[in-house]
Length: 384
Image (tube, rainbow, N blue to C red):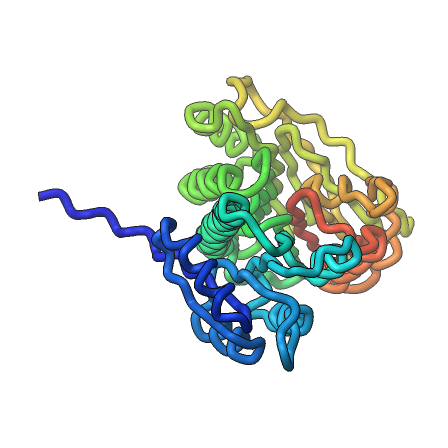
């Protein structure tokens, strides 16, 4: 037996008028709708009923003893619980100024008395439909937000819970999505007592599809433990697997191994911004020249070039996603690599953690309150 569908909730219409005859006419006019009709003969009762039952629509008279209709709607709109209830004024006041005042106070419509039944029914149908659609959209929005919050929690659980503690190396990272979930990803793995691997990646797009692709990239990277010490092989293998699942999207990626004992970094990248280096010996921050291959997940490619850099104590390396340098300000200016290099140079003498804080502080000042259009992730490490 097929289960009966849940019936639609009964619509509630509150009729507010101090004249019993007017209320009777309204009830007879609206009885064909089979809505639940609630009645109030004064403003105080109307407010009480509205707070308790939250009607779908209120038909409100203006000229009533004690509290008039204007004051009723003021109070309705002042309370969060009743502010969204649509109100139609029905009044003998037919001057333009009266209508404008009612609409300015938040009414959705204004019908003058004596009214025609057909007109009232048409206005009621229209505004109940609008109210119902708005409520359905809000419910769908709330559901989507709950789903995105869940995706975001799952996604953050994929990121490292903590960074490995390595003698002779300081590490810090920052991660921020433009929405509830995003496509940026970073990872830091301990290869042996003197070596770590640093992965930074950026799945195309935002929200749930990018988050799913990010999760795939994470799973692939962690499953290839035998390649953690092989930057070129890691990038090549990630590409081979992502080509099977990423279409039509793609991922940019940068993978580095850091040998603390040898004071050496090896870098391989695929369509990703190259890392930035701060050299303590000359006090200069520069963008490195690292040849690479095209993005991951688009097409097969051959061997991946690996670039080796020597490090000295005090040198600092920053790997980031382009959501950082491509952040826009309120005036549509772009943050850019030069500004990031300046922040790196000015704060490289401190810890990587302080550098991350300085970058986000400067980015916030630059954006001037404009929300981020893209996700942002970066990892910084310093030889000590």
